[in-house]
Image (spheres, rainbow, N blue to C red):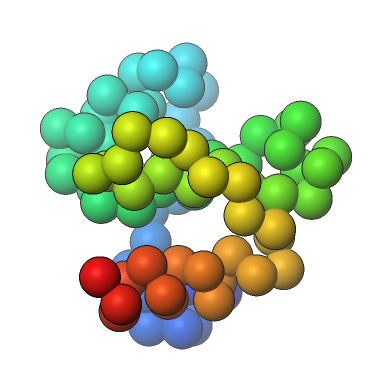
Length: 76
């Protein structure tokens, strides 16, 4: 909801499937940016971000995730 309110189109994949299947589907759909919300990362107060063109995930503090994504979208 926060992303949509900020004018950013978002897809929330809540299917009951393994993460690898969801990630493969993201690639097929060409989704350029992905946040992964996992139990362990939530305990640490972070989200896992992945740019489709990058090889590594980046941990982003939850409270700055929107600003981080805006930077990724509009400065690249």
